[in-house]
Image (cartoon, rainbow, N blue to C red; front, side, top):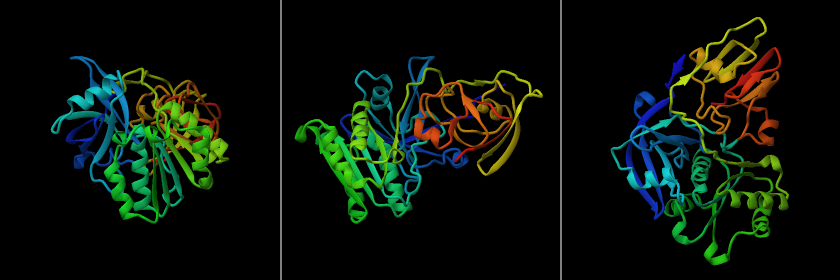
Length: 346
């Protein structure tokens, strides 16, 4: 069985230069696809970037738009030195072009828009944090503190938009800009000092790997509880998530487990063969489960194990806190127990 209903094409409405090295791409969503492109603050789009006549590469870009404010989808792309996809998008994309994408996905989503938030970002890591900040301020009651590190003032993405938000929410929103050319590289001790007053806030962290490692060490030094800290990590996708998905035939034998799945307001009870990944079972039944890479690398298919036991064949994205919260990856999960309950949050 083959399917590619997860692949959609959207029109580029505008390309906005944020800095010399970053652009925001505004994408229109036709009425017929509104349901497929509902999203939560902090999620990302997987984008197909042409690479020659017959090939392409897939990359994940966070949404800087907010479902509580923006009518269109907005992704923000910063050039990566030597990075083919980011440079192609910055150099070639124009209004009127078509972009092939997958539905929004990802688990870097605030647990509550009413819980006070510490957002910690560097460079283009500000992209999902902007979406979270706007959503919390407009759709919730949270106080938001945004720690934003960059090399220079010219590297600050969303500078004018952040100023506008500060003017609109002066009592609930604070931005601390940290610039390397003024203060040197961020240190663990310096960040720990900055984070210490926010020990009871939920923390969302996104940026280059070296910065995130230092920020996580600073969280520990500031005694911020581990369960409060959420990180966004993108993996390079080895396969082609835009190719037709071919599901090998399988049989529902007497040894199959039984799984009850809650998804998009519907409940499905299915036989789950022991050797078949949950995502393949769902897709084979025509159930529109979220997914992207199918490699255990992107968390697009993350779901919550409500009861029973499963085993993941591979996991490159869920961390200990996710596993403790019951998250598993539908593309990698196979059943251990006989009765299992699964819930997709979206």
